[in-house]
Structures are given as C-alpha cells and as structure tokens.
Amino acid sequence: AGGPGPRTSDWYRTSPGLPGRFQRPACFRGYGKPEPHPRYRTANQAYGSKAPTVHEVPTSFHVTSHAFSNTLAQCGMYRDNGLNTSLEKSHVTGPDNFITAYDHLNFHPSYNPSGPSHC
Image (cartoon, rainbow, N blue to C red; front, side, top):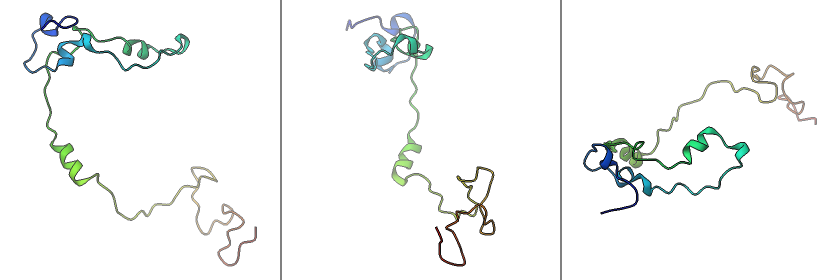
C-alpha cells in the first residue's frame, strides 16, 4: 500500500478510477534521453526533464469514446479519387510561373512537340 512518494489523493480530492500514473506521479521515470549540452538546452527541455509532482497531475480522468477511431480503423482513411484539373507550378522557372504547351521559352530545349528532341 505504501509506494514511493506521496499519492495525489493525499493532497487533493480525486475522482475514483484515477490511473496509477496520476495517483503516484513519483513513479514516473522519464524517457531516458541523454542530456543535451547546456549551451543548446531550451526552456522547454528544462521544463520537460522534470518529473511531475502531485501538484501538477490531473485529479480526474474521463475516458472519451473511441467510436471514431474504431470506425476509421475498419474503413481506412478517406481518399479523394477526383480528377485534378489544376495547372502544375514549375519548380524550374519559379513558383509564380505556369508552364503551358504554348510557352516554348519555359520548356527545356529538348522538348519539341512537332519533332524529335535535339539535345
């Protein structure tokens, strides 16, 4: 009955069925990642490296319905099989240029719709 560290229910009124990770936060051991160099350590890394205390964990836990996820697991993700009619942007001539068949200057010289390639 007496585990390591204080229980959340010793300090706060908790809902019944509170998971053990919230009831005894001192049992949390972290993720075991190596410490980064202090020069490159961010504030979020410093905050996240500390184990939670009984004053920081939730005192109630409400399970949500998994109906959407269960349906998605059976049927799969939505896939759009519609026809794409938009013009593609050129990665060669810039993001604002659209290549058309009538714009011969933007095409590679080897492209010749009326005859063989010449490169």
